[in-house]
Amino acid sequence: MDIVVTLSKSFGLQRWIEEGDPAGTEWGGQKWGWHIGKKAPTKINPGERVYVVYDKHLIGYSPLLYIEKSSGMMPGYVMVRGGNAVAVTIDAQIKSFRGFRYRWWQREIERPFPEWRKLTEPIKYGQEYRCPNCSALFASDARLKVQVCPTCNARYPGG
Image (cartoon, rainbow, N blue to C red; front, top):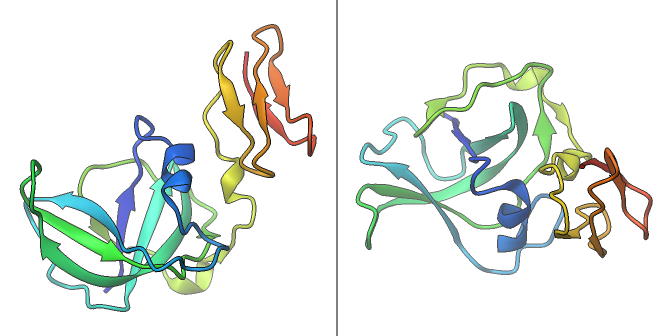
């Protein structure tokens, strides 16, 4: 059975993307862990989907490789994924939560979500910002309510 996790705004979508192997890219061979707390899901098997929610949006999934007991400072369990992430969404908002939930919607309502990278955090004044659309680096301007990437003209909330 597929499970759902929430990417916290404090961690941030951009930081998560920069870790590597996001949807739409080739797998670089690195395995990625997602800490899920002290209780491991018992109804998911390798190959089933781990869905990610960010800022009330379902942004996609990646197939589960395995679950292992956490070693290190955070006790509990870690879900491990490789590549092959897929960007999908549904036409409903999803409130954030801690830990994991089992998928509650039917897969048939999922649709491709190519614009998932545009769910970036508002830009802060004087912050250097990397455009999630084209990866260009630019500085924000606090006087503007909308920031515009100088390379690809993508627009982002700011100010």
